[in-house]
Length: 237
Image (cartoon, rainbow, N blue to C red):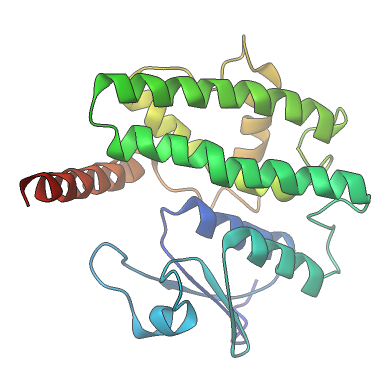
């Protein structure tokens, strides 16, 4: 898949939101130029110009037009490049359900994971966030059964909108399991999600993008140290 000079992605290798965008482009067989940003140290002028509101990745630049926010970008990719299987369902109700659960993953499930791994400073907070995550996977187990209609992915036979939102958190889930010694995707409690995770991780559009667990754990530790430092500065000022 040759790079298309007309399509550019600004991202960081460890961001699940960036991974979602890149996998969507791979599913549509769209070549693109990938530009790695180091948000911990420096934000490029291109990023600040392309996303002046949030100053975050991912950013998709198509021609000279930038787009921000991963779910919006994935929808755009699906609408612009129509030759490959659709990432969103054709049925209006199914499409609305996919949007609901993808938003749940981004707005509820991921923040609980980030709080646990990065900002939870007390055992009580860690316990509360772990509980929220385990409750979340039970909800997602039921959602998978409804959305997949007995197939291997949330999107049925093909990777879909919810797959991209949830699947890109799988490596982060492994980091959480490693650091907390808590099994998140259990074959006993969430057998459908456990089987889905294996299928998602081995998909051709995914496996070359996933970061190494230990490398991602290193980034999480840096973010945790940065958060602790900021909290300490707030307390002392």
